[in-house]
Image 1: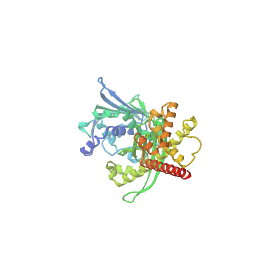
Image 2 (image 1 turned 90 degrees about the vertical axis):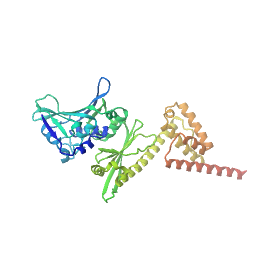
Image 3 (image 1 turned 180 degrees about the horizontal axis):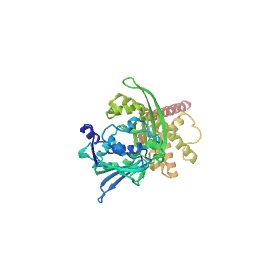
Image 4 (image 1 turned 180 degrees about the vertical axis):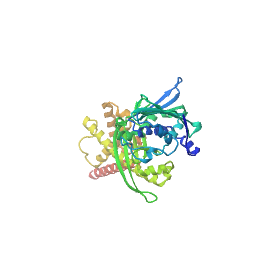
Length: 427
């Protein structure tokens, strides 16, 4: 048995050990993936009182060699990954480079134990290594065992779990961890993460995936940078996130505040090598106070607005086509004049929003839908401005959409006034 002491200031280790729970757990999962694991399991073991007792992260990667452990755990920043950008065998893009993940484990619990099984020549060997939050930077390495009959891999067990670790369970936690690893699992489909007994499968939860180049930008110090935006739309409602990532799609931080597009559930991944550079310099936490981050976020938000405006138009066309095929659409033929054309546009905007936003309407019977749509048609025809006032209490539009509706309503009023004047002059 040996004792390893980390050669770094203690206050720095304390800072690492105060990471947010999901960020800390994600680092341990990334370590497994960087060790070329094809399966990572995250389990939460409860005690008899159903309290969280142990967090266990196990993988089938290469494990950590006993000789390497003595070096890796002694030096913060001494990770082998700093000397390459991809794994040795599967050539996967590496996530970690600075060896901070092992210290962030202490933000989940006071006691952490690593159990490594690795290939040692023609046989398998194993050893254990442990540390405690009371003595950050000091690790105990237990003697190596040879000729073991277990497959290679690493198991990390965290005990004396902190109360904040309860945030790692539940629906929101599943959504959060899916956001973190969605692009990686898309890029490497042979990789599986089983989280609290449930496999993460972003592809089944996706409805659409779109990539946008954001073009070249110039930073405050004159450096030219590139960025892309990957937009994933989800089947389940309630997901809204803009995630800042390095150029390979590894999430570094989530932007705040979240942008809301009514009727859409999405995660947007802003990818740039410059984000990784800002992260290494400690600027990401400053958010939009940093001009480079503000420029990247503004470009992303603009692109998101364009994306969802187009998606809304596409969705509206699909709904209207279906209504016309089934006889639900209350208009027939082509518009008789400009007044009816504007009236139809107002009707189309409100009725398709109603279909997307209110499940009670979208899931109603054809008879109920036909009645509601017919009543909406009458309201639009008789008084489009009043109709807008009624439905604006229920439906929130973007400023651009509100301006379009008011413009159409004004045009409809003008056409109606002109029509009445013609009728009066003819009399």
